[in-house]
Length: 155
Image (cartoon, rainbow, N blue to C red; front, side, top):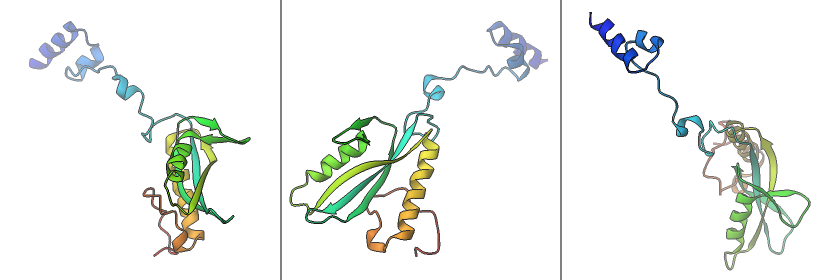
């Protein structure tokens, strides 16, 4: 008895008959926030790139990986034929501005990904590969996340 009244009320308010059959729960159109995830969300479909920040002693030539990262931001041309990550270059600028630092930092784009989820996976793979092949003191300490995939060589 009550169910037909609810259906009639829902239909009168403008819901479809399918919504009325569900007991009056009208489906809402997605809000703008639901329609397009923000750029840092794993659900983002915006193209991303994986970058590495390297460091070397001011007097030396041997470089070490300082950090891996991903960004969906712009790629810029800075003093070379290859584009660089705007985010990585901003970080490099801050690192090189530290007075009395014995290191010089630089960046490069390693790979590109079609979306954020695959870029996150690629970043974690890069950290894992680096941690597996490097000595413990060469682990990219600037990477808080992601942690390497679990494997027996790192304990």
